[in-house]
Image 1 (cartoon, rainbow, N blue to C red):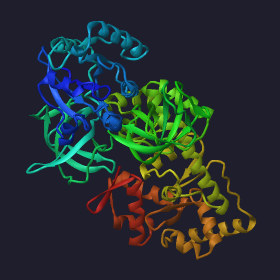
Image 2: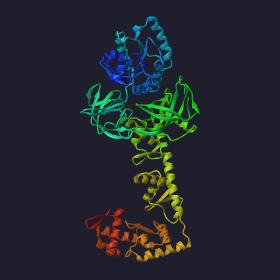
Image 3: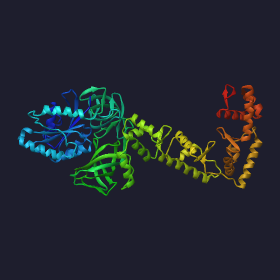
Image 4: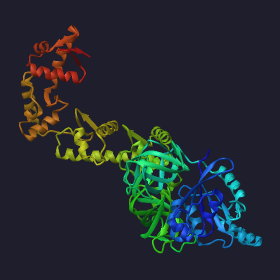
Length: 626
């Protein structure tokens, strides 16, 4: 069974609420002020049972120009609109404005309902139908059914129900396998129950006991209970009007315009790049730094416009615009919105978000080309563009959040992009080749500066590189990146040190003399006196530089204290221990002391190093060969 939301739209006093009551038997004007004034102020909600047994939700929106903001909140999530025109007045200003708003919100199916038909002659109804054909030409209502009704006498109501049923079958079912999201249009405390929020489920599904967050701010909450059309349910699905009882959130911490969704599934941003169309009837072209009202979901946010492909966008034209927001916006890629002028308040256009994590730009031809690709591109193109635009490694969760697509679908596209080498996996995160090259350039720059200051050093340790990196990979990710740099012959690894492949160390005569002195000293110590780098340096900076130069060439550095052996002494010790193991299968510390002619402390240092490089393995009080 499809989950469908039907919305009303049309000029004030054209009979929207009366029609809903005639269809459902229920009154949607619940405020005293609404009943007193005879107009809808807030959104009204109810449901309709169709002849085929399917139950659809109904959102009744206000028609007065002062309450357009409420109307836009109600239009969010509408699948089928009952576009209402009173027979005694015909098309009016809010009729045109509501049609524009519905188009910008991507509503593309509707029924034109001519109300108050008993108040006019049949000849006049024919004239109204002609007017409606002109009015709807070129819009999503151009081929919509036109039904004549009178809500008081009941004329045409049953026919309308049948047409609603037929049109409902043509509505495309919403996705329930994408991350859950609901724009909140009401939030209120209920005595003995707690906080209740209502809205239309835009995407995904929600179940009792689920942990969710309220955006903006990602405040944690839990679903205590769910109602759909006034009945308790364990799960609600995309396309249903839903009331959710929440725990973990207090009264006053949540309001209309907030979004309830899965943790990490939404993007919070202050700048968005968009495709915008300006209404043909607007008196306001969009120009640089124009202050606007952005209506998105159930929220309105003030923003400034920066056209990206022209100085301004005139009536009836479209173009790319950057919107710089005056407060954080919670959204996803491809979300629809409405633009209204700051003052006087008038609907002037609408559009779609192309880049929700934009950076500041003015008119920019190259940026416009990128936005055109994103607008037309497939999911894989959007993922690559996202990876290129972010100077960091991205988790699968972040990619899913950006695209707004189902996790499994995104994962399939990511795997295909990995095969095509359009993106690269670094441990558990992803990066484009373009961004990886920027990370590599940053590491090269770090090493170049280090080599300039330390010409005799082999390079830097992983941890030293990590503390200076601009891109903040974790240690495992940095190891992966360094391996890629080695494979590309950019860096070399010498023990624990990494240096540029191009870095060549040449000793001057004085340093050559120090080197020979060090070799003689370490050789004289042999295995009886094992010193470390610090003690051999003697607090002399140049001796330390020469020792660094010797690492991996003449000397071996091992152990937690950076102990030093000549490579020739290490090979002799290794040969003696391994020969004994080949003949005897195991060796004790005492037997190793006899072979190495050294102290117990030094023998333990050597044996522990053999264990660490997998030459030997300790078993109880002896070693065996691996």
